[in-house]
Image 1 (tube, one colour):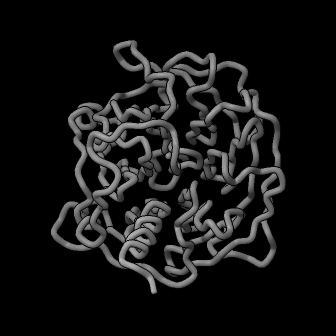
Image 2 (cartoon, helix red, strand yellow; image 1 turned 60 degrees about the vertical axis):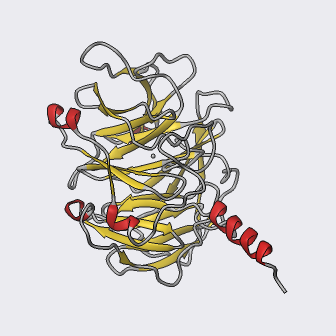
Length: 344
């Protein structure tokens, strides 16, 4: 018979292995998957700090959310959430949540030389293709307009060699159908390398995105996630250094950066996802917080502060075993965009 100690060890193991993620559907409802073992719909931003409770949307066919690199992506055209590395028993599979039908299906995928244990990825808005950097190669995977799995396996395609060393830990963000690579060796602070998706082309020169005072976001590892537009391609992305000292919002239309308040929880394992008007943080202990954001309104954004999503905390209280508001550490864990924590 199991002892109390063995049951506690099993419970602790389950908690450690859980890798929940957050995402938005195309109507900007905040979804939290695998949080406290269930899936939740927290609704629209106006309700997040109220006295209500998030809705339980847990249903059959879902992944276990226990992969080491569990990541969620919104396909805006199809109103579907794609989950990579969602289940440790089948890391190659892509799990698809149809946010309209509220149902899950599992898409078989052929990986080839793609390493599911080491990558960062974005989902292109217009083509609905994944692009992922794994070691020193850029891979792609065409999702078509899938909102449910089909019977034909998809495949990761080795698109081309990337001009980066094999030990580069990627930080990737999407804006204007361009992939922006941060923290590239030899690229100065405040600049990014760019891959032009529609021409499959690495630009030879990096692009600078200075702050108004002439300073720059740091050349360091961190996470990046794109702010959506109501219907068009993304124009901005947020970069959060691993020390959580600030949030840097890069606008690729104006080639500028704005520095905003860093997260309350300084968790190097935290992941991020953005809608049109909010940046959401999910810490390693299950705390969900958000920073309100209005594109182009610099004064309002500069004064914005982080708040907990209380209607999620009321149904899925954060664990007290890991992250804290002063947590620090080194690279590791899952990412909102694919590798050890880097944001889609």
